[in-house]
Image 1 (cartoon, rainbow, N blue to C red):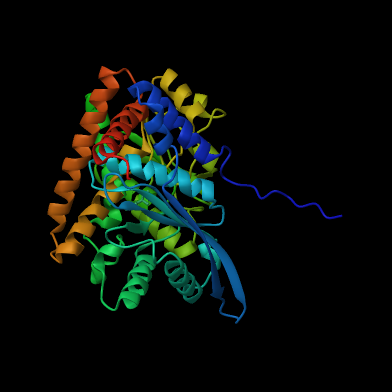
Image 2: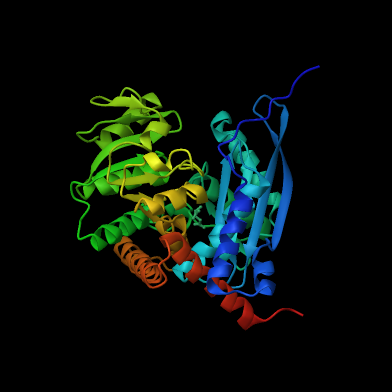
Length: 424
Ligand code: GLU
């Protein structure tokens, strides 16, 4: 008899149950009726598709894909597409629900969605990835669209994949549909500032949080987990603002230097060698160790559930900025809160991406494109206002920032649902 080992996953807790229990807690805090809670506890629509893809050697592999819409009360659903070998339907549903709250907190006219394909994109060639992306798009083509559901990049996807989605959808329509997807490359209707937007939004949140302590980012020690789009750009932006980046990591491990890491040298080293290890002037450390280094600001910008009940009591930072979605578990949230550590929750801290996605969608619909200074100024306005609103709720209701953000966001979605009324 052969034993089948359960695949190990980065998810220690069921993310969908986690997202639902966060919502139940908020419902209790804002006095929401059960009939409303029951609606918001479910995803409006989920599709699971199989994505048969021809490999370069002529064989066919079949990938599993999902697209989930949590809610559309405030507008078309919005959210990224994740390529990762540990994607599950339940994770996709949780991420879709978080998008609903994120868009509502930002005041965007969008609901929440998320998609995913169970694949390790690093193991596919570019041509294989293109065929897989085009087939996945075709499988979900009746569900997406500029007025219905608008995908974007997430973990494992980038402007390149968005261009394929845009092209596949447009070829099927017979004309270019700029509004079907955001995070596109600039030459096919992308927005200036979209690539750096998530990191820029996070940096604005860190600035506002430090301001509350009469501090600035200058000379603050920062540790960043994850060296993808969000982590690398956040490290660059904060370093340029005068922060000392003491630790960086990617999925293979990290590097540490109490004197500060040259982020541009780290980017060049990663480009040349494929990893951060061996970067001059640094010692190596693991991803687990990175979370516990001596620093002022810790930014987990990789995957979910990295700060848990097991390590939250050892976090040294005074501010945790969630560049990733769901990196701090509810158990860890309670421990960090008890210890007086300020958590800037994902729905606020990483919302810069979807805010500039909204700008890209608007620009695409109008076929009129803005300057980068305009994009960044408007992003600053939205994030700063959302931060101030969340901070006020945090102080007035004595709630941690996440619960304050949820109270505002969930309240807005509930209000829209009531105003629209139940059909029929
Ligand atoms: N995937 C990103 C997020 O989690 C961006 C979503 C979007 O731009 O629609 O917020």
